Length: 372
Ligand SMILES: [Zn+2]
Ligand SMILES: [Zn+2]
Image (cartoon, rainbow, N blue to C red):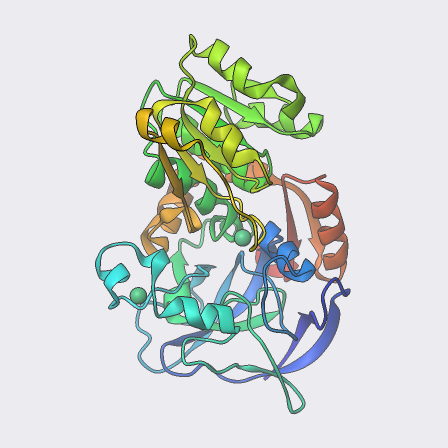
């Protein structure tokens, strides 16, 4: 079929809206009509080259829509079903999947990096030129073919612009707190970054019963917004964060620190802001050639946990519906993350606003009829 997609052909180039040919879904694949898609920092990092990915490609990995067609072997969704999209379609059989850690799936990762679907081939073409997928999803298009495991069935009652965010930013931030750090009632949590991922970490910390939730962000309007989601204290980086956190915790430091930024030096600061026995979770992706240092002797003596978290250390097929159920019952205000919506042809403006830090989350409405 013919589709319209926003093609990225070179680093930092504007998106080129082109008519492409989209092949039908093959075995274990699903054709989805995209309703809405978030614009995530990883899209911007790929456009700038910080995250390498084959081009030309169609970016976008935080979307939701409606199933149009299914390939052979697909039984969990039928045409007409609403789906949120997961960018880590676990194979279900590798050692990580069978150990209950599907975001580490060893079958998915190589295809993700190659910009293909699971079988190593692509479905999008511009004449005789192949167009690469991005994170299996390529949601900056009016239709996309995704692996069956990426299409997570959700209730029709959930607005699709809200469901889109559950597919990356919300799951990443919430999961870092709940699945990885396992924040407990009464904990103090420090969260660096008040964008979509950081604020989702704030929501997770509040639901988990954290007592103090301290948010650090350089932008005043973002700090102010964090309160809506349950932050108890907002700090600017210039506020001597480590000393302030210690003071707020009787000298001990936070039980958990979440780095939702990935900037140089933040991991070290998060380490210092954490109490002995505490946990530092790194979520924001630093540049590929960056390294972090922690003080070796203190690392041993203070028994701190230092861990990364990919995609909320989640089981997307189960966790995305759980998040949307929490949204439906009013306990996870995902809709409040959407600070700006854009028409599909305003995609580059959404990237500009992301770069300027002016959004909690910008959402591109690809098909207004499906969202309203
Ligand atoms: Zn993302
Ligand atoms: Zn696997």
